[in-house]
Length: 263
Image 1 (cartoon, rainbow, N blue to C red):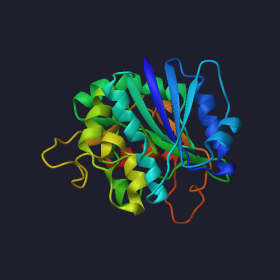
Image 2 (spheres, rainbow, N blue to C red):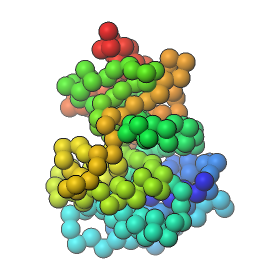
Image 3 (cartoon, rainbow, N blue to C red):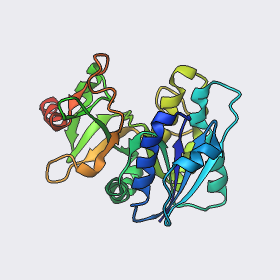
Image 4 (spheres, rainbow, N blue to C red):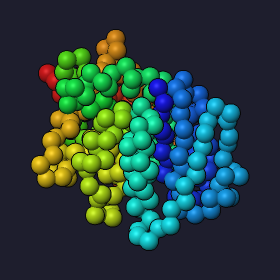
């Protein structure tokens, strides 16, 4: 399998450490992967500060921003459309510059996504952070969404929408997403919408008129009645787990909450 990994990086010196961890992870993928880093400035400086590997082709694209900087998150789709048309890659990834996606997570996606997608089920991931006590927590949910956590058909149903600041789709689903979901015209949430990928279609009528709903819910298959470790991706700055504005559920208690909601 050949994967195009698109990383959105708004240039800040103190964030290059996270970007390099993403590059390190990509170098360990069992599949062939090309990395495309989308930035708004300092392409030459960035090229001198990122890690390099013999098994990775890394291309840095500098976009001249005439609109709000948040819209940098939508720039990768221009190149994706070209790549899909030329049939270069089997799968496409979009990831924010501080979300670590391991090789095990890629294998998890390959194992489950195709069959679930046929049933209009989005394969779920959990973006975790480590709090100051060293406990991994899930912060991408809200109190009013907790009742949606359910166990059904040996899967954890996390509801319609599951945000984890990255997506990975095969080329057919990527093409459908690119031509179904319009660019967000709301600056305040355009970054989040870019990071939802095909999961956004059909949610709050954001899809183009006449388009079909791509997914009806998001589920994580259980393995030995447990949430698989491979579904977990990591938000490297860990800046939400101890923030009083965000709901942080300890990762080990997510399944417990879903079980209690199911009976």
